[in-house]
Amino acid sequence: MKQAKRNNPLPRLAARLQLTLEDRSQAQRLPEAKLIRRCCQAALQADVKQAQVSILLVGSEEGRSLNHSYRGKDYATNVLSFALNEGENIADLPLFGDLVLCTEVVEKEAAEQGIDLMAHYAHLLVHGMLHLQGFDHEDDAEAEIMETLETVILAKLGYPDPYLEEKR
Image (cartoon, rainbow, N blue to C red; front, side, top):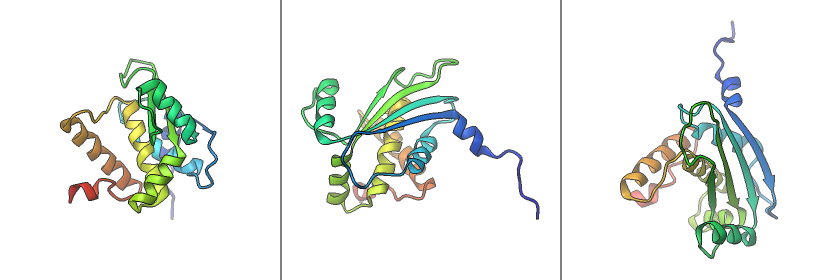
């Protein structure tokens, strides 16, 4: 039996995304780099030809400091997104951005919601990547679009709908 070698999308997908990962947290259970890459690649929209994204995993103290400095909120949040070009697709310029995940908040939320920790990381990575591409949830219409995209992407990755409880 012949194996299909033509048109293998994996090398093209990998070439679209340059990803760096730095762990400054004390977390014991973190997603593997392979899962992080899969989630980030899955969230890239078709019009993004190239992306350079840095992922930083931090503890609650650093997460709180960053959230306070950049958003004026004095608490650690699960994910922060910093886009160089705020979701604008500028011709021939890659998407540049940083995602900061506060591992202590992610772990606490997963435990409180009774969801798998890696599924929660997957959701937040997809969520953050969509923010880098200009998606938001400031109003109901924007939230509906973003949540639908997240649900579809996560389903393709094999994860359940993170908004299922809210829909009931």
